[in-house]
Image 1 (cartoon, chains in turn orange, red):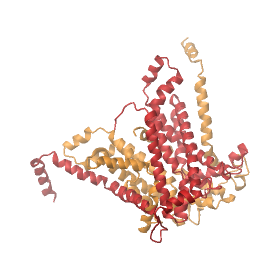
Image 2 (cartoon, chains in turn green, blue):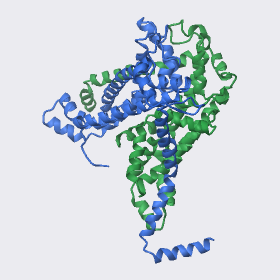
Image 3 (cartoon, one colour):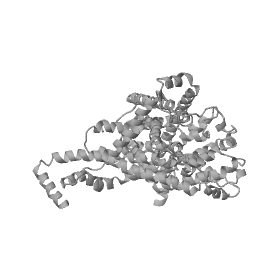
Image 4 (tube, helix red, strand yellow):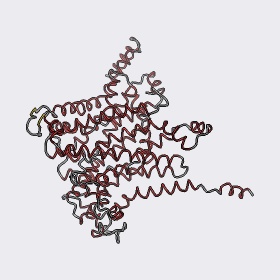
Length: 288
Length: 312
């Protein structure tokens, strides 16, 4: 009896909801098509890349990956990968350290010109990168640091990515002050307070900073393009670019195999931290 | 050392008023925390800005000392360089196509996901993924191939490859930006979820239908988030580089139709070594972005609704 009545209550299928899911799935298919295309093409034999209309390859051409692993311009892919990792890792370390230090000062400490400096920091978020690029290049050129990794890593240790300073400031402002005040009464100075109380609590914001720094640095092209010349200092992104220059069709398969390899770290990061990423992005936008 | 230091510290803390000393100490501590940022902001931001302003009035090729030319870079840019204007119009076209399309799509999908009970988290993550991947060279290369002659789009619509058609190549670049609508969508979604349910209930009690609720509750309550997304995406769109570079194989073609502003700046500064000219271009970009942001903020007064004011 009861089961019948619940079934009857459920009977009106929510067609609107079904349509919504169908629409979302259709949109998802379109959205994910480029990724499917990339994966399929990376495994296609050379003659099928353009000529064939099928998404799927007739057979899996693993030799594309073999060629990709040989690298570009006589530089092995392991070299390119470790170059990319070195830059991204350095950037992550730099941003996490320098941005959290600056953020703590802005969020919790009092000092002269705090208001104007905070306003300036916010303004630099909006500042187009290109406005300061050329003089930065000239400075690093004068210092003899062009064609090294310093121009790519050093600025991160100086909190130049104000977006992350802002993100961490916003997070720290949300932390209860009571702990720090209690600690201060017990004679805890600002340094211990920072390292032992605030920093551990700020971990979610630091993780968000680390992940976004990694992905943005990994994807970065423009800065690497102007600062790095030697093929053996190239990153994966720059190596892929040299494929663009010499894009004969026979190189298509290996080129996209290398593209897949270059995307892999981001995909892994995404799968591991998707909740952090999505929520970090959402909160950064809302509290502004 | 330590044995002597600790007693004197204790003695002083009791001797002087305990309130004043920590504050001065804090001021000193603040500058320690700030020092990396201060160094970066002055040496890597302020100084370069001043230097590039100076260079914009010079002729400079990185090797010979800069040579003062007054306003010549600017007059040349505005009156004698058709490629400059071409890059300006290309960028404006790109901004006007990409930003509204991207935001509209982000809003529609966010609204669709908002009331969804099952699968919301999955869709949210899946739609967000392109925002992380889309800035990469890998995806830009995919774009070039998919929109090339014989690529998927050519095969589907028989239009030929967009990449080689002057009127269409920029659209392919813009679609790559639209594809990354996940980032603003996530922000919209979070904004939608912060709208108190009571507002909708009150509106429903007053007899408001779904459309009326959308217009009178959702839109005003979401307007700060919409504004935030609009400013952010517009500023970013003005600086587009990688997709245009990759889709046109680094040339800005066909017929300069994807030569966006930053690509021309790169071409002048780093390919042709006219650093003075490129600095002038960078300053014009800075001013234009400043003006556009100011205009957006000015117009926002009439359409952005802040429920709680003066929070900061």
